Amino acid sequence: MSPEEEDIEDFIDYLISEGALKYIGLDYNNEPVYTVTEKCKDIFPDLYNEHIQKTDDATFSLWQKGIVEIEFTEDEQFVRLTKNSAELYLEHKDSLSSDEMEVLFILANSDKNKKEKE
Image (tube, rainbow, N blue to C red; front, side, top):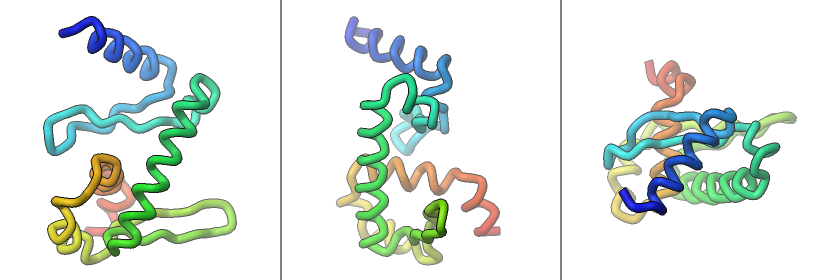
């Protein structure tokens, strides 16, 4: 492992220990996936804001492709996989960005989506 990779790993470990990152699981490439928590806003606001922007952009792109639906309430927004998300994923999988893949991974592994599919 290079010094840069060790620094990145140490930084990730620090963020996890501070509650700014949460481990989600392994992605399709067997790489770890993390989500940024609200606590990151206090510790590293720039990282938090960049993550939110990338996630919003990826989610909007997935919505345009019909893979997710977004529901807005007075206080929150909810993002869910659509009923035909699997078919649309297959149609678009070669053109999806890594950010879009990460959003899909998190949605597919969220408890709410698992319950709705049952």
